[in-house]
Length: 232
Image 1 (cartoon, rainbow, N blue to C red):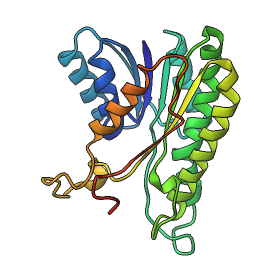
Image 2: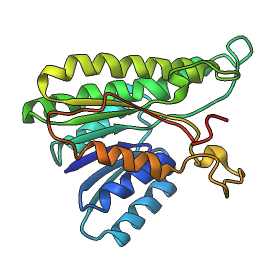
Image 3: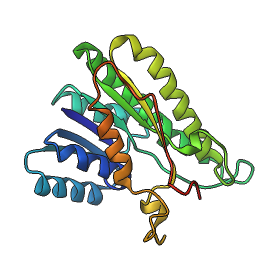
Image 4: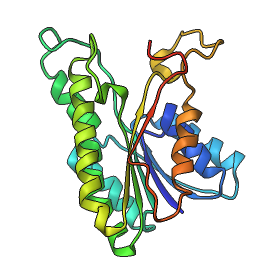
C-alpha cells in the first residue's frame, strides 16, 4: 500500500511510519525538521529493506506547501492511506496567550490536514478505496486548563473529521478520527515513564495499522485512547 504520513520525523508520526514500513509498504513522509526526517528515513530503510521511503522536507501549515507535498505524492502513486498527524502544541489561556497563537494553531493543526486531504482524496475516490486518519486529541473532546487555542484547533480538527466522514461515506473512503491522551513523545521530555504512566507512540501506531486490516464493510469512526490510569 501507499501510505502518506505527515509530521513523520518523530513521535507518533515516526511510530506510524515504522509499523507500516515493517510490512513492506511504500511510505511518503513529510516534516519540517530535515535532520529528524532524514534520520527516520535512514532508520526505516536499514531496518526494513523491503519498504520504499519517499520524503519531503516541508511545512504544510500553508496551502501552497500542503499542495506541493500532495503533488509530490500523487506523481509517484495513488494513495491508499493518509494519516494527518502534523501539528503542534503551544500552551496558553484564551485571554492571556500571545496574539497570533490561535492562527498558528489553526494553521498547524487544521489547515495542514484540510488542504492536503482536499488534494489527495480525489485520487482515492477515483481508485474506489482509501482511508483517512485524522490524529486529533482528547483536547478535541473536552476543554482543560491552559489548553487555549490548541484545544480550539483540535476541536476544529474533530469537526473536520466528522464532516469528512459523512461526505466520503458513500464513496467507499473510510475516515477515522483518533483521540490520543498523553503519549510519551518529545512533548513529555524529561518525564519518568518507567512505570508506564502514559502511553507509548507505538500504541497509537499499532491501533492505526490494525484499522487498515479490517474488511471494506467496517470502519472505526472514532478511537479514544487514554493511559490505563486515566488522564494526567
